[in-house]
Image 1 (cartoon, rainbow, N blue to C red):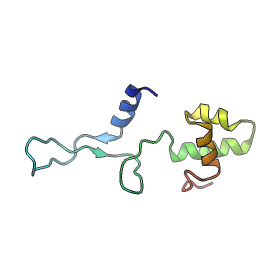
Image 2: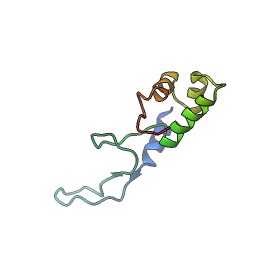
Image 3: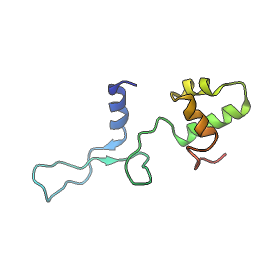
Image 4: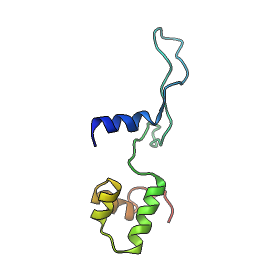
Length: 95
């Protein structure tokens, strides 16, 4: 993924009209992260959503497609697909 695409994805998840800091001169509005967050509260720029993870599991369960092909289709690695299917990652997504 190119830097330009990453920037576009990042900026689509930011609200640049947050509250303005008043105790420091010269600062504008805070940027508020509007997408998924990690457990520590920091933003997460994931390629997948809960819905896509559920779709991956459903497609794989139906058979006829390899983990490699699923990875290519969803823009992630085969090992990411393996972790999704074994619930090492995205365990919170039901089904």
